[in-house]
Length: 283
Image 1 (spheres, rainbow, N blue to C red):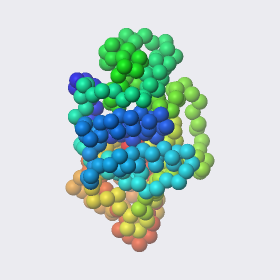
Image 2 (image 1 turned 60 degrees about the vertical axis):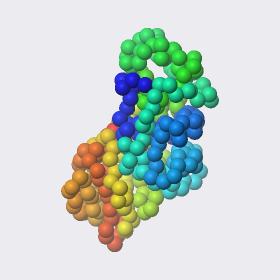
Image 3 (image 1 turned 120 degrees about the horizontal axis):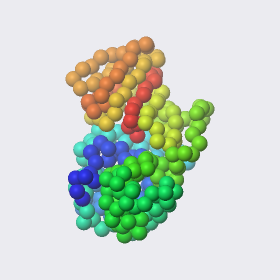
């Protein structure tokens, strides 16, 4: 694959996570990864790789979005991918044989293009991908990498999550969210309540975060392609960004480039709550 079709490791890891939040997306990723995971090193973990280890995060996350129990494995895998973005989706080449069970991608792309009254040539011009490649994908003669599909969708524009969920940009968008409509993720004393995670084309992530005493995002610092900031509502929390470290209390805030390695740790004896924003969303 040419460099024009490549994505940064951060973007690719995030694209994997977003796409896998839908049934079709999870199927697409599983077909890709099961076939290539050992010989193409699509995802490198810090322990011996098994199919279960690679897909726990995706399967558990998809199950949770449909109302079933969510284990802490999702958060652990998410943080692992984000903490090691340089290990994700490397060595992808155009000579890879396409998975045989992903016709959804071609059919969905063709339907979407017709709905927007775009020719293959016009979509190619908008996205910077050749019209011959778009034609092959629509005919299910080849399967795009996550980064290539993301580039094609930029011609509409449409996010990976909306592509796999069948959501269009002109669909009615909710404005208000009751408590039960807000997505909750938790693991190892850290609890995230996310606002509007299913909104189409969202460019911001807003969360209410809770850290139990001793809770820690981990010794491996987090990094992702975003900017983030927040205010401490209750308790105290130690925040490390790059080589800077401080303890913040109620009313204090932070704002930094998320590409800098960062870590949150509650060193006190009471829970800490904060409200944060991140743009673009990190997951």
